[in-house]
Image 1 (cartoon, rainbow, N blue to C red):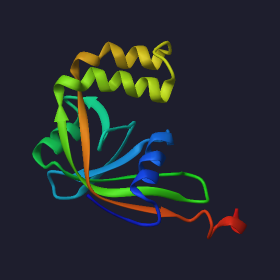
Image 2: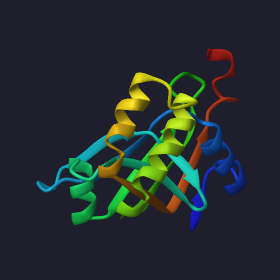
Image 3: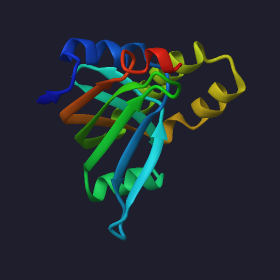
Image 4: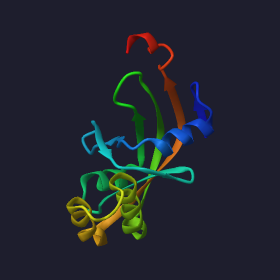
Length: 148
């Protein structure tokens, strides 16, 4: 996998591990227009994993065309982040497993009403493995130091 930008692959992996905001995932809609969706993610191995309902539009779009792009970037200045091109692979057999990992990562435990709602539908979840083909990092913290 190729990577460009100021960060090493190790720094990119560290950033993805420590960042708790949704990944923005872009895929190709049936009309040919790009579609963008935000999903919780967890980096595991060389993939960025998400979960969604098997009947979700994003699942059908990725089944039809697995090419995608993604971005994880901080929402407040100074800006930094990672984006890339990828291929997405759906894993129906790992839907509940990944959903549970996402709940732990974003909610801390499964005691909230949201966690209970999501887990009640866990048997119809599919996991999405976003397998990056290229990565680009950027880091404007030094450039923006005196602007924030």
